[in-house]
Amino acid sequence: MRLSTRLYALALSAAVASPAGAQSSTNDHFVTDMVKALKDPARWSLSGNVAASRTEPYLLQTTELGERAVRAKRGVAWGLGTGFDVGDKLGLRLGYSYTNSNMEFRDFNGTGSDLLDVEDIGKLKTNIASLDVVHYFVGSRSLISPYAGAWVAGVWSGLGPQGDFLATPGGSQQFHWGLDASVGVQVRVIEKLFGRAEWATTGSHNPFNGNRSYRAVNGVNIDEPTRISKTEWRLAATYYFGTPATQPTVTATKTQ
Image (tube, rainbow, N blue to C red):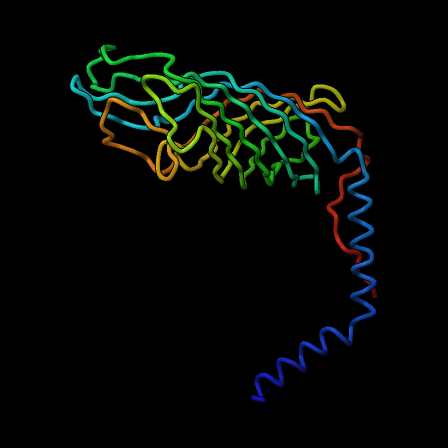
């Protein structure tokens, strides 16, 4: 056995064996603190929101009469969420958003013409489940609290019905992973009730691109983005289930 390997093994053994009692005590305190925090209703919240949604064009095509874009019309989305405050300025939020968008062709020749406009060529239903780490800049229970959040999202898309303009040769349902980000401000209305104004965006794979992609017929694709972003401007109400005396961060207790 090489000397460096022996030293590493010795150091590892010492780290595990010698402070075993102290580590066990520290871990016990940490687990106790975590369980206590999870049982604290003041750290948990429930929210609901309505939003104006906008999605980038999915495709750009050329036809005999010029260029046209395939896109979802701006519409209304709604969502739900539940949150857990790890500390005064740090939280976790699990959210859900649903949008039922009318698809359309939009003239893209740059002349202001609506010659290639065709509305209601199909419906795209989008379900987004997101898990965000949220940072409150001045504390989650402050009178006015700006915040920002980001992490991961799962996006389910469903297109239908098939018609003269859109087709789903690989199936009408698709799922893709994406990234989610948001910024906003939270305002206390009463002790447990807060209002939020929020901008949120989700970027994921374009369902009109790649394997099992949706298709727009009667045109030739000249721009087919790999990824697409969906943006929402939200108004939300958030209710906390308790009123904390203090909001300490969950940490392990040091032992002597």
